[in-house]
Image 1: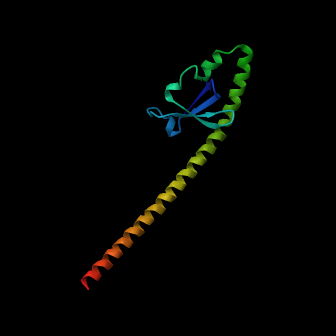
Image 2: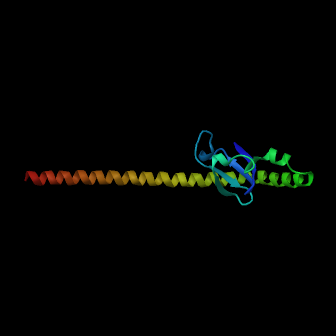
Image 3: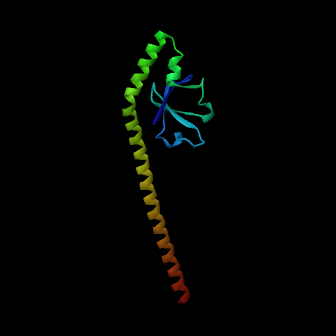
Length: 131
């Protein structure tokens, strides 16, 4: 569920397909994670082509023997750290979703309270008009 590649601007990147922004068929920007600092980096889908972004095996195939050893080792370190980074991202998403749900519940309670208040005022106005 992830695409590993190399960016001419950001170095090693990963595209997490679990992120709704990155699912196929979506037309918006892509959200990569830059491996060196695990920061999110947005990119236009149209830019997701070589030489701007290159699939990891294709990038490695272009390197000389010494560069290949270094780049492969670096990529393996990032891949080994990915599960922990992914868990942290999922935790943050869950927190945001929980906060949004709590806000939705509060908003719904407030709307019900306002509707009840409006009904009460309308009843009072009706009773006053009859008197």
